[in-house]
Length: 186
Image 1 (cartoon, rainbow, N blue to C red):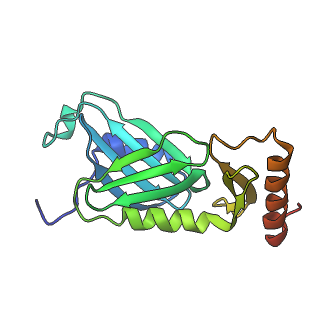
Image 2 (image 1 turned 90 degrees about the vertical axis):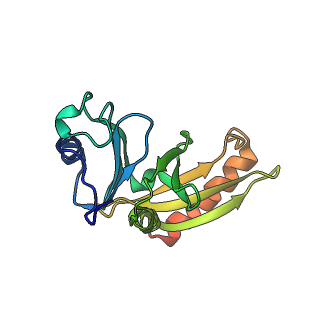
């Protein structure tokens, strides 16, 4: 392993440039079963690009697949992320309930986990856990987009039944409280 950090191939850099909205704060190569993959964290979003068929250690001309954007989501779409230092895997959990996205880092030192954490925390202005009738739980939050726009989110599991008037009432009340505290209309 050399002194210099690895760089994505020209094709991956070009794909990243065409999909990102601002400057890259951190980037890291990812371990995949086939090809090259990179995660990019910008002020506004998380981007993951994969270039299938790029043999490890081969030149850029050896790429057999066009880079594809696998993840392109703003920070307010991230519910949370966990980083397992033993396996070197960041698991990104989404507010919409999509399957968590694993980012397996290649073992080199990277600031990606720290930047990812900082960007998610920056996007959360206020959050309140909500105990629901029947024992369930949810969270309501006021989140921030990179342009400063504030909006509210309700994050709950599959077991949250919004057709239940008591559950809907508890969530609505909590959402009104956090919106009011953030200066948003309730």
